[in-house]
Length: 229
Image (cartoon, rainbow, N blue to C red; front, top):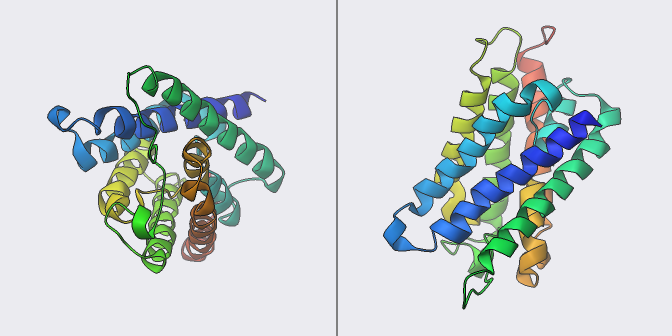
């Protein structure tokens, strides 16, 4: 239960910090954070939680990460569903807090609410195929970073930085394409509040990250057959 509470709080922080920067700060050009600021915000949520709860739950904060770690032989199958449920609920709580804050401004319109999308709902107008490829590849690379940085032979104490910086880079690459998911819990939390097209396109932001994570787990296990910590 302590692990599940940690995952709930961590995913709440990821959504509130990352999506909050997009909804509250990036909406005002005079603040100057732009795509780069949002990308950094997502990375910082992971860095901060990695050191806050990594020793409790492993700081997955993401159903795709849990699935990828399971495929890589780093996570027990019996914990998979409880972790995913805790992550989705944490994401929803983060989105609810963000909604409560955002609607405190007169004239606020929810719009996409930092949801992920493709086609006309892609920030750069990218197609469904481009979105699918992007989310699979970005999640694959994210899991390779996580599996490598947390390996027993990796330098100690730096995993949180590597993973957080990796997520920042992923956002810098893919915000124009899909608004960056690589995390089904993050996508679900925003889509539920945005509704409409965001819910209709949500399937891609479950399927693609999970596919990318599964492939990464298999590939990394092949590359690194030694016993892991």
